[in-house]
Amino acid sequence: ATGSTKIYEEFLELVRDTPNVCLDFAPHDEGEHVGVKKTGCQGFCELGPLVRIQRGGETIQYVKVQKEDCQEIFEQTVLHGEVVERLLYSKKDVHYRHPEDIPFMAKQTRIVLENCGRVDAESLDEYIAAGGFEALSKAMFEMSKEDVINEVDRSGLRGRGGGGFPCGKKWKQVARQAEKTRYVVCNGDEGDPGAFMDGSVMEGDPFKLIEGMMIAAYAVESSEGYIYVRAEYPMSVARLRHAIAQLEERGLLGDHILGTDFSFRLHINRGAGAFVCGEGSALTASIEGKRGMPRVKPPRTVEKGLWEKPTVLNNVETYANVPKIILQGADWYRTIGTEGSPGTKTFSLTGSIENTGLIEVPMGSTLRQIIFDIGGGLKNGAQFKAVQIGGPSGGCLTEKHLDEPLDFDSVKKFDAIVGSGGMVVMDTNTCMVEVARFFMSFTQRESCGKCVPCREGTKRMLEILERIVNDEGEMEDLDRLEELAKMIQSMALCGLGKSAPLPVLSTLKTFRDEYEEHIRDHK
Ligand code: SF4
Image (tube, rainbow, N blue to C red; front, side, top):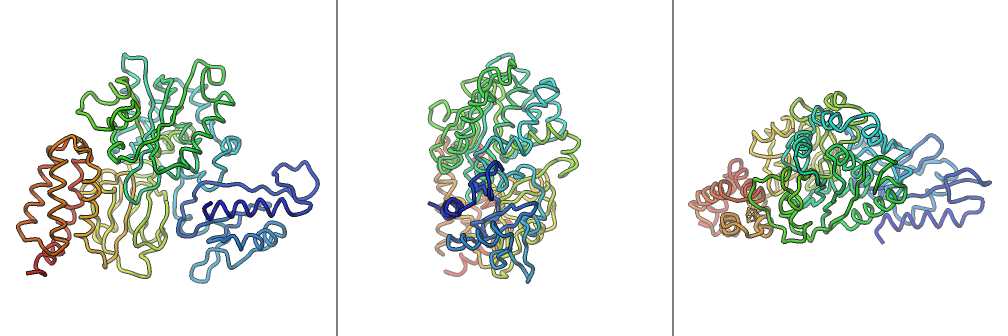
């Protein structure tokens, strides 16, 4: 069992073993009533396992809790309302009782992650009590299908999987197809090194994702959907399956939902660990039982996607935005973020950063706000050097970009992409040639091999990078890297190949001196 599971079990036992205490939230017996539940991830990975106590109107959160601490927490806080100060999060002599007051949380805007770490991810009742399924109900009973699509379109929501394609436009394209069999598919194949945003939503708030998909299905008249989940996310699969079973049991999934004409069946597909299956056409091929390889487009997925039928394909975070947009409206959504990229974006903070974890901020926030205000700066007071954004297909941003707004369009100007939101923070001890080699070795290994520029080109680039890292390179290698990079970018079939050279190109542009140093050093 993991640390959190052990702690959960310890609390269950403490409650059961204490006279006059019932393991229940409902006040129908004599004595104290204590409920113990597991939530999803709150995002503050650095401080886990976390224990949140709700007693009366107050919430107290303890950090880095060990099994041995449970008895003290139970006796002092749960039974008597006293605080165990040593287990509170503290910074600069300030002890924070309430989780939302911790600077890491206080500076975020949580829409997608609003329930993560707060509700029992396995309880439909809790999701409903937190306002869940009000948006679906509004869509089904107060809005026409066109209204739903227009609202999403007006909100300006853009696909959070990396491309940033307007979500409403995609739904419109599917809705106008003559073919009436349509699918709604969710890409939960989050494969970027250092990214864990979608996994946290699937584990921490599976009903929200499903509600978003159901709204899409209602709007484009689809009766079947698939969630494609990364192989390494067994808890996501378990929580989604549990959620689907509960919804089916209550008549909220299946035929004639809530007595209407709307029917929707939802299936889970587990990936087998191939990064390329995060690409739309490879993903749908994989669901069909074929080898996950991208195909030439057109036709596009909106016309001929899964089983050659019109398909809405969005990622987890995109669907998780939809319920709030329907409930609070496009105008409200547009008050958050930037003109061209409304709403929020989740980012996972990893690398040399004080507060590793999962965050959600308005689009247009700066790197400085993310890394220093929320992330707490670099680990052990180290000096910031760069951040790799957008995973292996992204690029490096440096000190001069710290005050630039981060959104889909502005980041592109610096040869990087927001991507799915992975951020790897690096300090001045990091060798940028080694970073480029790491990402190239990742994409080279994950190249599906279908087209020569990507299959052979990435291999040649990796060979050169290894030569340079091992101090065996020559100056001409830098021109060769650039030539190969341009060839791959212009000729590769899919996004994986086209973006594979980005980390090399962006480090060559900003840190060329480090490449040259490796080469000069051995001469
Ligand atoms: Fe496969 Fe790479 Fe070609 Fe994409 S670019 S189809 S990953 S070989």
